[in-house]
Length: 138
Length: 369
Image (cartoon, rainbow over all chains, first blue to last red; front, top):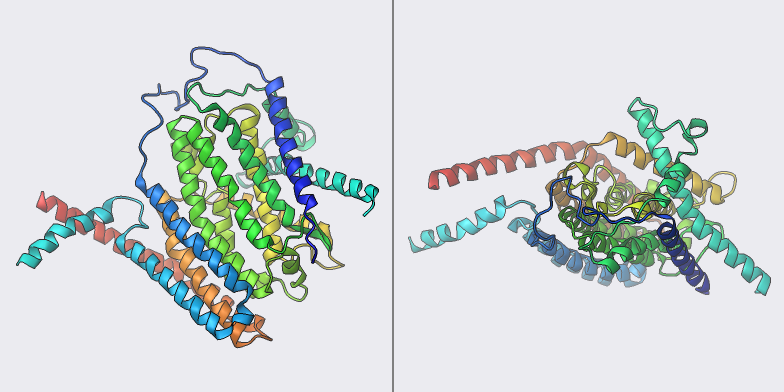
């Protein structure tokens, strides 16, 4: 199969042309005014306080990390999926080990409560540590 | 190729590119409001033109002459870039979709990989929109949509891989080409189910529309956008993605352009309309999920199911390299029936256990304090 790539470029150009045409048209047609409140952030009519560059929950960052790990897994599986017939049992055993390792990572995260959104479970685990120490000391 | 055919191709592709996005932005929001009206026993918009058919043009014109407000504290460059990035994504993904026999804009041999790789560009745009707006609601909406979309991206990719395994190729042309005898929805209903749920979450549609939950976040990442930039987010991108996602689903599971009386693009359009109707129907029927339930569902239910399904599919392909469709279909149908029968009960038990644990913790804390 000969890959014909020029339509890709044409299409990309079309997409860029359309989006810039839309934005330019709306810029030219739209009204412009500037009052005291125009540039203020909209927070349901309540006067905004402080900055929006606030610290947010670390869960979002963690989630992105998990995504990177499992997404990379998917990339490796892509390679195997294409050659599943040629790779045979050897390849199958290897991919089962590979998925098994990541599956146990998933189970570990689950057990740790990293997949739960909300503080309860994790706090309980943190509280367990001093109790555990007490138990070990006897 | 002569110059004339080249120019004809060029013009055709250009028109197709504009047509898909503009048409879906014109048709789907209007159809959604009328169907919503019908389901909710109301009329929906029916005043502008016959049956309200000119409503999308009126809306479009209104949005064109509205002001593009940029909040004074916003990061101006990123704020303007975000809708453009997100807008280009569905247009780029559509390139690998086979429209009719022998007509794909770019028949890549890594089509499936291209689909998921380019399809996730839009996440970047949403994050930029949320952050650049300098609004707390936008920030939360942007973060939420990123968290949700990346989580559901994984089951989506895993199920695309399953189809790739069945076909033995990553080209979407081959995927549709190999569905001559049987569509893959009949072979892998389990993969279809997971793909459908994950896809709805990718599209930020109800019951997964937490990023723009209007009761908590005003309008999520698009709170600060107005005029045509808002239209880009709310009409072009949302519904353009619905159109593209429906096309991808049709190509992967529903036989693409195939149908009785010889395959052509008409069947693809019909399937896209049916899928879009399904999306709107679910939108009008289901309530919104809680954010913790939403994230847990992707990681604790969809990903394990997809991994097991992947392993089983590979096993059957190696066991019976000549005749693997039948055992895979048997496995998949049995799992779907079992899941549908058992899942509600299991979920109820798990939730009950969680509630009991929480009560115990509460008792512990109060007695310790």
